[in-house]
Each structure stands twice: as structure tokens, then as C-alpha cells.
Length: 553
Image (cartoon, rainbow, N blue to C red; front, side, top):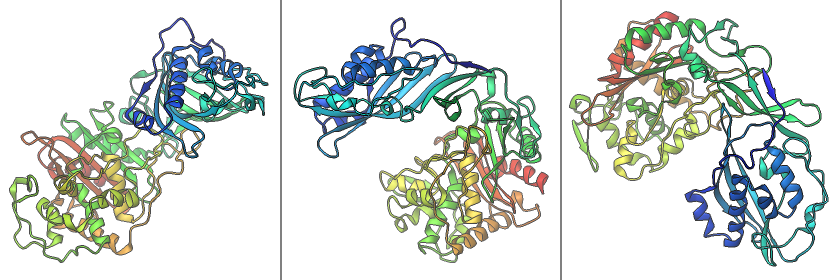
């Protein structure tokens, strides 16, 4: 492990990126004093260009600001930083705050990204610069309590009734302070990784696990750490590159070696070279016990894929309908071949069930029946329900990079109709749908987790959710069990126990092959699998999940 503690800020020799403005920044610009926003923009421009003296001159404490800006990146090996203004706010009419996104490329490792904000104040006199303190040491240190009170007035650099950036360490980074600064750590070699029981996991034996941990391809590893200025004690890790690192000892995952081996064997046997992903997690606590991809070690479709979930979404749609008492399993909800709402919707192979009950619609996966129930849910109701009860659309903290699902508010009735059976603009992956299946089976969302607390990756507070009503869970379990015994998931019917499931066939293009989905649960785990280039979920993802559940019974 190599620790970089010394170095110089790149202020002159290299090319520096200019500040950008996104659409949010331009919109905000019309709501705040243009002069304040010009000052903010000029400050970010100069900072990005390495013109730190010019940037500091736009603050109310120029000497301190310049010293801190110069010291901020000492030892951090930052190249070509970029800053993007995002929003401006003037809540009290006196000051303006401009938020911005920072992207700081760390040489040879990756990009450190974070959010911060510039506070701006209106100046009305030509007083002194108010800089009674100094800055010293890596990342700067501000020791003045009152120096800002005599700020120099100016309009982007001078003049009465102008604007200045009110200098404070936190605008550079929200966690930079008189007590804490940043340090770059470069790490040699791959860390030891263990499963939930302490058994060693290697990238050679379990490439999908290595890829999920961000350790594939022999990437250089390192981290930007927040440390105590006096003791050098690590307070936290702000950015990690090339995979996780445990604070002490090996990286402790939640993987169950037996389930992981079963998933890898099933994927190799049944994916037959097609792109596919699988996640299995414990219903009780959301801990991931297996992650597998095809090709093994390739793109982590299981955690980062963005697929339409197809009819597996009907689990969530049904929960929303049952929670509103908008439909009962025994209600007759006809299942025609076609139903037109802006466009023509149909069922797989244009099947139909005349006079079907909602139970039959669910277990045989009738799309048109679900479309016919579109008026039972408000326009944004499925979006809100998915977030409130299933955590979808909120930020998850799994310990590794993950895409945590998206159920956007539909733009019209056609999009709303498609969303009800998992098409349109909905996006998910096996991690999201395994979690949704666990929630349906237990009634309670549990934050999915792959790396146990104790390393520098932690579960965090996680999404805020509510528990599903007990009667909704009871009906969902009956419907998913009936899908195995009497419906489209009969591929699992020979397995012992009260296994429940839901199939899905997600259309990718009108003419091309579909993506096949299956989600299932037994007494302990929930599992989801997607296979690209399939015809049906039952005959593509079905055999994969069958073999996993059979192996762990």
C-alpha cells in the first residue's frame, strides 16, 4: 500500500477543463441576480483553469482563499478538474447560493465526484479584505473566526453594490474543515475477499463476484480518504477506485459460497452464451448470497443492467391494486387478444382468456387485462407506490455500484398502460427484482447489501419505506404460488416447498427477440434472473432459477 502525502497542485503546466452549466443552472440564472451568477461562474471558471489567484480575488478573503485552493489538491494527484453549476437559490433575498458538481480526475485511478455550493453575498462598501487568518497544510486550514466580516466589495472583482463569494472551507468540499482534510491512498495488489462464513473468494474462481466488487480487469486501486488533521485517523472514504478495501483484514461479503456455486453452474449450463444476470438475496435481511453474470466476469448485468422488467413488474402493480382494494383475485377482468390505448397492446403470442378472473390474468400473465385496469391507479401512483413500499427509485447503498431501478411518472395514457406490465420507460435489473420479490414475500423492504459493515463501504441509512399491508402480502403469495402450480412458472412445480414465482417476457423491439425474466422465492431466498435474446421467461430464465433452488433445498 502506497500513501501519497506530498505533491504540488497542477496550476500551470497542464490543460484544465472549463466550467460548464447544465439546464438547471440556466433556469436558476433567470431567478437570481445575474451579477451574482456571473461572479459564481467566473470563480468556477478560474478555479477549473488553475487561475487560483483570480478565483480568490472574487471572494471576501482573497489571501486565505488562494492558499486553501492551492493546498486543497496537494498530494491528491488531481488532473483537469471540471465544475458544473446546477442551481441557484436566494431564499432570503439577500444572499445567493449556487450549487455545483465537481469532477476531479485522480491520475491513474478514476474520477472523484461530489456536490458542493458557493455562498455569495452582496457587498456595499470598499472595506479591507478581512483576511486575518491564514491557510496551511494539505487541503488548507482556516484558523480565522472573524476575518470575513470586512469583505472587499466588488462586482466580479471590484466596485460597490457587487457580489463576492463568501469564503469558507466547506465550499471547496462539504467535509473540508479546520479539523479534517483529504489524503490519497494507492493500494498494491488485490485485497483478500471472503464470503459470509470467512471462506476465500478469488476472481479466478468467482469472476462475477469480482466484477460486482469492481475488481475486474486488474484495475489500479486506491481511495480518497477524509482524515483528522491532528491524528491522521481516517474518518471516512470519499471516493474508491478499483474495488473495495476493508479497514482491517479482508473484504467481508455477504456471499453464500454454496448458493454462489449453484448460480454459476446454472448460468453456465442454461445461458448458452447469451447475456444474462442473476441475483439471489436473503428475504430476512436483504443480504446478497449470489451474483452471477453471463459471460462470467463481463458486464455486471445483475447489478448495473437497465432492462424493462416485463411482467415481473405485475407483482408490484398487483400489490398497488390490492392495497387500494381496486381489484380482488376473484373479480372478472377480461383478457382479450388486443387492447388499444394510443397503440395496440397484446399478450404473448396474442393469447386470450375470455371471462378471466384477475387470478387467471396474473398467473397466465395477461397484459391486456392489466392495461384495462389503468384507471384504477392515478397517473403517478405506481411510481409513488414502487418507491414507498419497494424502495425503487431511491438511492440504495449495497456497498458496490448498482442501478436501483426507475419507475418514472408516465407522460400519457399509453406510457401508463405499458408501465402496468413492465414495459415503457421502466428500468430494472436482477438486483432490483430480487429485492422486489423479497418485499412481496415478506411485506417489508430490506436494503440489499453485498459488503458487510466494517469496511469502508457501509449500508448507510438506506431508503425510507413502509410495510405492505398483511392482507396484500397474503394475496401476493397465493398468486405467486398459483403461478407455479397452475400458471406460467410450472418449470418450478417439481421443487419441494411453497415456492412462489412470476415470469416475464420483456419486448425489446417489435421484431427482435425478447428478454426472458423469472423471479421466485422459497422459505429463505428471493432470486431474479434475466436472459437476453429469449422467447419466454419460463424457458430461458426458468431453468437457471430451477437449478439454483434445487441445489440449495
